[in-house]
Image 1 (cartoon, each protein chain N blue to C red):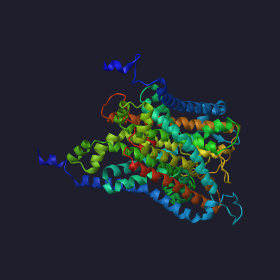
Image 2 (cartoon, rainbow over the protein chains, first blue to last red; image 1 turned 180 degrees about the horizontal axis):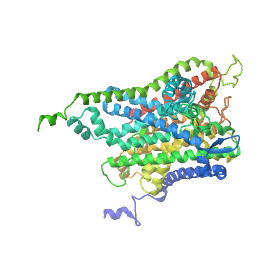
Image 3 (cartoon, chains in turn cyan, green; image 1 turned 90 degrees about the horizontal axis):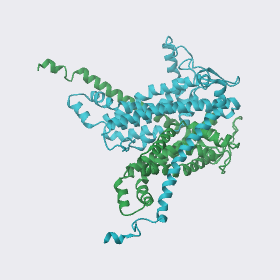
Image 4 (spheres, rainbow over the protein chains, first blue to last red; image 1 turned 120 degrees about the vertical axis):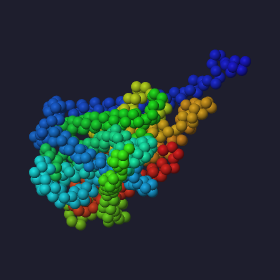
Length: 342
Length: 293
């Protein structure tokens, strides 16, 4: 009786009329359209970028453009190898210097420091990410690079027998300081991600190690670091992606000489830097070559970031206790800093 | 068990020493990581403050640097340009970003389309900032045959902000308890009311944090503006023309051989860092008051 009185003409009176359902549908389809818009935009931009790069690739070939050692604007010859090599050397330097320091800060904050120091140290390291790229460039070229010249010259003289490192004359903008600036710039993101994975190490593991008589360092080495290896590698790869794409600070610091790097303390060039520096005056084939350099940079960062996400995701999945399938909250980065790398 | 075998596991002086050395190195590396920050702050203050003066903020750069004692002007147009460009970029990026995040959390948790969107947002996160400038250059400068304009710079910055806004909002929205949504639905509220009256207000403080961090990041970017907004000296209020901005002016001043112009760059850099720092501090204060993030 009760149920029957609720029903009028086969439709529950609790159901909404189609007019009342309209805002719901509008919201749902509107938001879906927004999401589709993002996809469409990226695909459109990618295709247009490839289209603009086409003349350069047609003239020199994709491999020829990427691996020819000849970037000559006046002679209309565009082989991007010096730029690719410059980008890779500075980014790898950034990783070599930045990642150990970043991991050390993460260990210090999560395992060693007194509780009072934890928040201030974390905030200070995150503030490094708030400094704009151009300010790093300004500080680097007028303070860091000149101050480091004597030390660099000393190393170059002592290690004169080592190819690529020693022997040469140290110039003020050079590849090494560009890598060093990049190391400082990627430090916050690598540190933030390492900190987050270290926070997930089960207390049981650490207490077990300590209970068996391990010292603090042995506990870190045996219980913390192996557990976090995947996350740290993923964080380092994300840092590498940042370093490869970083433009302005590198443009200011690397010297902008379109030649194969002669030695570590000499001048070089990088993919992002060549675009920032030459695009303003570029015409015709030159402009197309710069679009091609942009495409190369885009693809390079895409590959590095894809590997990074995979590594981080797999590390998170291995760690997370098995829950309902399809629940992705467990693999989502737990904080805003981790999600955005700020 | 013989005492000799146990001794092999004893806390020997060598192990103690290794522990001390390792902990010392970790502390040293942490201090090393903070040194650049201190040095940057010190140099910004010592060099930047000396070029700050009332006229520094109220005059435009003149571009006149060839004569001694010539007045090189201040950074008024750069400050106003940065504010205008970033404001328009925020107006564009924040609603779209939060909309996509709401869609991802409320409607698109699973399925190939949702996963594709998520993947493309991740792709956007990793795109180098200068590439966003090239995108907008291709679409709006080659595409329309027109010249640089402030609003084109805003669009490039909006693209850069989008993934940051989406990812940070998504993280916060995921933290909104499912119980809240289900209670509202059980009381008969339609989905749009649940999102508008329950989910978004609950997530608001966390989303504000993410949005402010995105704005702070966009305000410091130079590369996307170089070939979209261009650079100019005069104060312009129209987003349809060339527009100066703090990062671009600093970048142009860094390469100048004139000391006074480099000093102007330090002053401008201090101004920019202070602006970004204020946004960061507000973001942190808001996130501390949030119950979710």
